[in-house]
Length: 140
Image 1 (tube, one colour):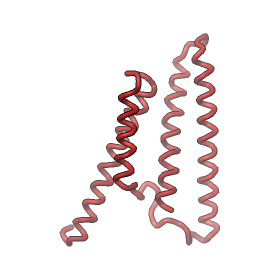
Image 2 (spheres, one colour):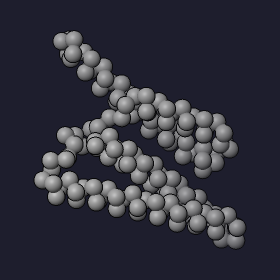
Image 3 (cartoon, helix red, strand yellow):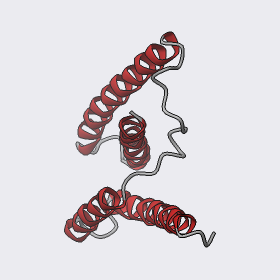
């Protein structure tokens, strides 16, 4: 369950990052630019998705608390590392998106930020795995 909550939380953070980038682009777009309407549509669709994810997370939290915490993961979402192969797969996909994006575009900016975030997440997951391995061999 911890990994499911982590995945949902990660998706929500990615959507919020994209929402922020879209809002920034909208703010900088001239009022007579036809792209303004498309940006507003993208923002509205993304906001609906964010709201739906947030509501599902609230319902899940209420169910866990209602069950007396018996279904609760033993770590917080932030402390539940994703598996390294999952991080690497997302990193590769994001690198591919960056290579296909127009330089200095919103898509390139989002991909670059996501890559930085994935690089840090990979480092933490790798360090955690190494620590566990060292502890398992008795050389902490």
